[in-house]
Length: 412
Image (cartoon, rainbow, N blue to C red; front, side):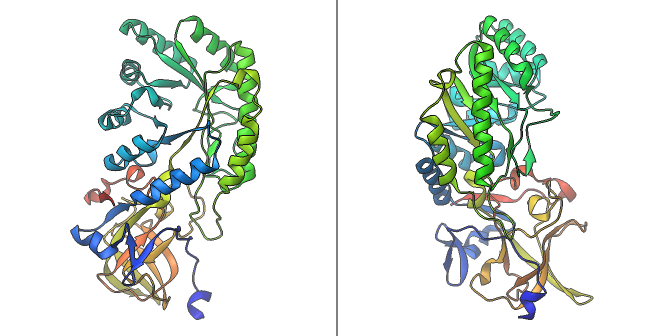
C-alpha cells in the first residue's frame, strides 16, 4: 500500500501487447530477444499498425481517405507498409519527399504542407506531381513561377488558417495569427488567381489542431471545417475537388487519459457526408493522421546500467535517454511533466515493490523517463519499456546530443 500511496501514476499501457514467460512481448517475441542485438532500440509492431488502420476504416465513412503524416515516423520499413495501407502520404520537407520516393509510392497521392518551403523543394514537388498545400500568397507566386519555368502544370491546394481551433488539442494549428496557412478571409481571391493561372486546382487543407481525445471536440472541429470549406468554395466560385480535413486524433499518454471514441467521430462524420452541400458533393475527402496510426504500436527498450540510492530515493539509470525519446522526458511541448506509460519489460507481470525514478544516461536533469513510479524491483541488466514510442520518438528527438548516436529501429 505504501508503494502506491507515495507513487506518481504512470500513463496507460496501450492494449495489444503480449506476455511471454513473464516478459513483455512484441509481435510474439520477448523483449530480451528483441534487445539482444543491443539497446536502446525502438520496436514497432506491424500487426498493431494494421489493426489500427482496419479499426479506423471500419469506424469512418467509406468515402473518407486516410492519409499518413510521415513526420510521425519515417522509419523506412514502417513507411513502406504505410505506403500500402494508407490512401495517401503527407510530407513536410524535400527530405521526406525522397523518403516517400524510395518506397515506390504513387507520388500523385502525396501532399506537401509546411511553411518555409524552399524553391528547390517546390521545384522537386512540382516535378514529381505532388500536391502542394500552399501556406502563403508568396509561396503561391513562387510555385507558379517555378512551374512556368519547368513547363509543368502544378497541382496546387491552399492550406487554410481557419478562424477556429480544435478545442482541447495538444497543439493549436489554426485560429489567431499563425505561421501555418492562409488566413481564411484571404483564401478565395488567391484560389481564383491559381485557377485563372491554369494550375490543377486541388482544393483546401484545413488543420485546426492535434492530439485531441475528446470526441465532441473533434466532431465540432470537423463540422466547422466542412462549413468553412463550403463557404470558401462558394466564394471561390468553383466546387472543391478535394478537402483535407486535417487530423487531431490523439492517443492516451498520461494517467486519466481515455482513448478517443472513433465510432462516435465516424458516426457524426458519416451523417454529415450523407448530406453534403453541392460545392462539396464530389470532393475527395481525407483526414491525415500520424501518431494515431503508429504511436501506440511502438516501444522504446532501454537497459538499466546502474541502480543507485540518493538521499532516500532510488534511481534506475538506463543506457537510453531524451536524445531518443524526447517526448517521454516531458520536453516536447508538455507544460507540466507527467509520466508516460512505462514498465520493467523483463518483469512485466511482477507486482510493484518500490517507488523508483527512471532516468537516462545524459548529463542533464531533464533526462528523466519516470518520476516516483511504482515498479517491480529492477536490477542492472533489466529492460525498461517506454510505450507510445511509435510516433515522435526517433523522428523528433535530438539523437546527436552528447554524441551517443541514434537508437536502433526494427519492425516486427
